[in-house]
Amino acid sequence: MKKPIAPLLVSAILCAWSLSATAEQVVATYKGTYSRSTPEFEVRAPWILDWRVTTEGAHDSAVDVSLESAGLGVHQGRVLMTKDAGNGVRLFRRSGRFYFRVDSSFANWTLKVVELTEEEAAEYTPVESDDSRR
Image (cartoon, rainbow, N blue to C red; front, side, top):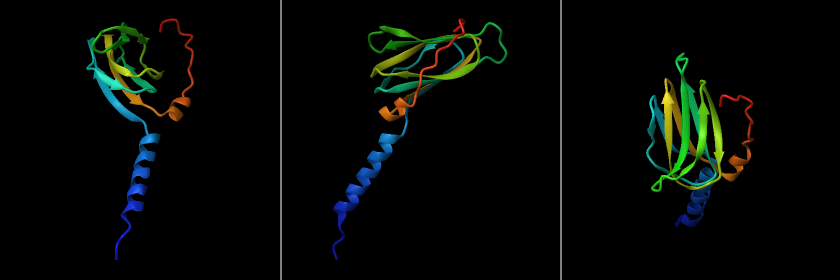
């Protein structure tokens, strides 16, 4: 008796495709306590920067993060500036090879780059900050 392999193969491919199309994919995670440039990463849009800053009670803490184009070193813009402990998410709609330039004083920071599907990106709503220190 011959078993039908084609239907099983198609089912396996569809299952794997549906899982990859609906799940976030972590591209890179960086942690530090001092100023530095991260290693380069390649990412497809849409993607998010999921960040966390802790200060352990320091009064003069600050974290400033800029996005730079890999290879060229072209400044793409500031993506985070805070003097307070906290966390947040920032959505990007540009693919490419990048790295972060982190300037940090008396703070611990974590930066996670996560690729999203268009459906997941649609769930993010921008929040305007009224805090002039950021």
